[in-house]
Amino acid sequence: MRYNSHREPQRYRPVSSPAPARRVLSGMRPTGRLHLGNFHGALRNWVELQYQYDCFFFVADWHMLTTGYEDTSQLQQNIHEVLIDWLAAGLNPGVATLFIQSHVPEHAELHLLMSMITPLGWLERVPSYKDQQEQLKEKDLATYGFLGYPLLQSADILVYRAAFVPVGEDQVAHVELTREAARRFNHLYGRESDFEAKAERAVKSLGGRNATNYRQLRRRYQETGDTEALQRAQALVQANNRITVADRERLLGFLEGTGVTILPEPQVLLTAAPKVPGLDGRKMSKSYGNTIGLREDPDVVVQKLRAMKTDPARVRRTDPGDPEKCPVWDLHKIYSDEATRKWVNEGCRSAGIGCLDCKQPLIERIVEEVNGMRKRAQEFEDNPELVRGIVAEGADKARDAARQTLDDVRRAMHLRAD
Ligand code: TRP
Ligand code: SF4
Image 1 (spheres, rainbow, N blue to C red):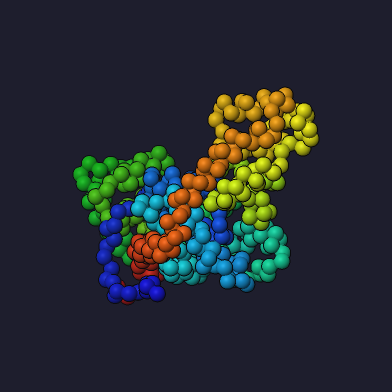
Image 2: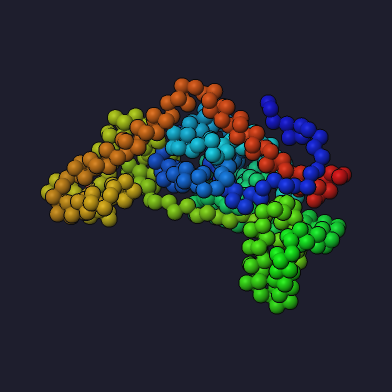
């Protein structure tokens, strides 16, 4: 394969790539074809973010192995399906970087290095560790890989020095672990021997007035602990786009009297996901078998929605119901405009409309949405090599970014001589 992380005997250049201050990173496991729950829960948000940030999105195939190591026979197929769903949903490889985790082995190298400095207790305390072991009782999850999975996620994020990580509530603890791991790494290895001198030089390179402001704010923060001064100085450094990344990190580290920030701490971009009900009224989830696929056959979509559960109080057409007790109502909240929702609310409570009437506008909207997805997916279904090309290019871009980080990490840990 093409991936060879140590291809050119690269000499270290003082990093001068643009600061990834607005870089976003997120990943998704290749669970097979995606459904409307995945779309509204994450994907729709990614599609918007790609136009606002420098986005890196990857298929987390190694993560899949942490729970699904026994049977990997469907892995390639599932990766392919997820990628087509991403493209069908509107992820645009012209603006976002789309790739497959295992094509960028730097994730694994950083994971290994981070594993050296991560206390076991941090991993044992991640809430999903015990939860998932209990939930997936049929699998033996007492493995090294499963325990380390949140740290692999940390490496995924830190290797791109991502500023923001769009995830749902269930992943917040993992981003928190990432922040702690980054802090520990910087604390241990972010000390250049001639840090002070380099930092002083970086201050000068800010230029006359900015340098003076920086010095004053730094002194104020260090002498009085004035956090507003700290924030103003940080903003001053962030806003300066003439300095190198290395100098920026030095200046930020110098403010707090630490060292260089080699791995910046990422922030969660919490995805406000609507509740997407499945056909049986429980949360839409592949494991419940209650889903509507993103590229589902429109006739099947119609059948499924017509059979979808409603408020059980409406046994006969003449029985009034309560939308708050009906999963179909949750779909109206996502898909219907104000007027339609008003019509549903009144018609349901007065038994003025039947459940099939109520579902009709939803069926139309969802069929339209699914048809759009199917149309966009078509060319990729017909030409799998298009998809391969997209992720090959994505992996190249991702590897470039990851390699720079690993360069700095190896140097900071004295794993290289220069
Ligand atoms: N752990 C995430 C999940 O199971 C997927 C994931 C892997 C991820 N690496 C990531 C998400 C990095 C955000 C950032 O859904
Ligand atoms: Fe649900 Fe609509 Fe039937 Fe009311 S009329 S129970 S909201 S499907």
